[in-house]
Amino acid sequence: MKKPSPPPAPRAPDADVATAFGAAIGALGDYAHVTVRLRRGLLYVYVDETEDAVARFHPLGGGTYGLSFHHHSGAWQPMPFSGDLHHITAVLVETLGPYLTK
Image 1: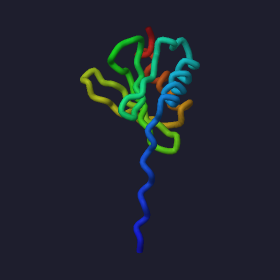
Image 2: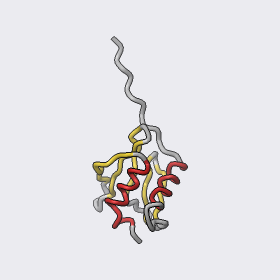
Image 3: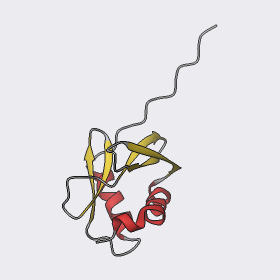
Image 4: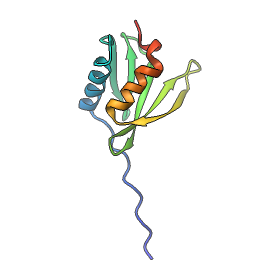
């Protein structure tokens, strides 16, 4: 009997997806200073023009993304949330809002 093939790997986001995530965050409040940049297939969230990302979104497949927080130790801490663009950006603002302020 043939083994079922594994599910396809999540597709890496592109620049248009990064722009869409930035717009979704901006629509949730005064976050014009927050940017989303595509790096190594992940979407990193920056405040102002800093070089240290606050959070990142990683594709899980099927238009769903996970969320991680950049811990002060330098490690990425996965958070127990996932969802589509609108849900996961709302979770970002709700849970990490204080880190996104000017």
